[in-house]
Amino acid sequence: KLRRTAPQNALFHALIDDARNIGGEQLGGWSHDDVYEYLLGEWSGWEVCEALGRKRQKPRRRGSRLTTTEFSELIAFAVRRFAEHGIILELPGE
Image (cartoon, rainbow, N blue to C red):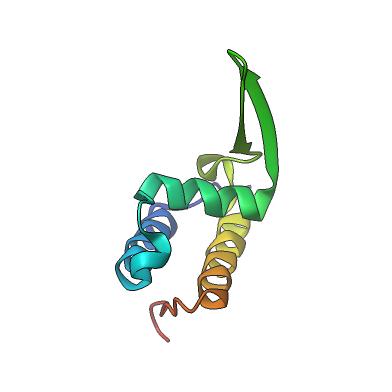
């Protein structure tokens, strides 16, 4: 199975940047990496890790390990999730 492509990865990161620009206060205080982690976790599920008496969630899957098909699904999920919150993104060719 082919791993995600560089153009897919670039598109996903560009969508995150666009969402942060359009989202304004909705994404206030969220870094690019915060949004990236959120989308991965919401799409793939979360796992709880505990260390030094603290718990945190992390995505079950990493973007670099996704196939091209899975990464396409993640991109579509991200566009839908942003739209649910009024952040309308356009994919190339739309």
